[in-house]
Length: 157
Image 1 (tube, one colour):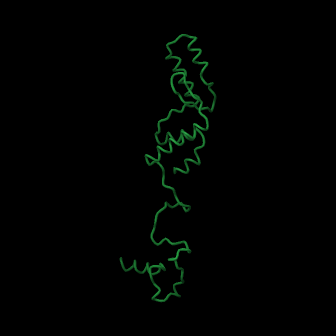
Image 2 (tube, rainbow, N blue to C red):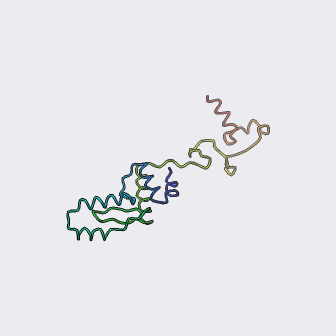
């Protein structure tokens, strides 16, 4: 995936988590099922009175389907929103920049960008000259027309 494709296609936490998984990126994003599991662990590990536990539980965000959370500490969770998504995308993008995970962008033809000598397809180039072969004189064969370049390559090999 290219950097541009990442920014254009990763538009929700599901696709971000899929991409993070592909590149083995550690994250602290919890889906609703994981959130429930973490809260259950917090409850089982809590060494406190029932009224303190009740206060902890009352302070938690409600578990909702298709919602994502971040665990800060035991009984301390944040509900993630679009701003968090953009922040995570920036972090992942920076990680991919640093570690070279991006694919090279391709040009419109699907070919990778390569500088190939003699690839003149822009007629506004002052060195590009399109002349029918039967109209050329011997003294006009030169590198700038491209025709002479082919002849010169033949002499080299």
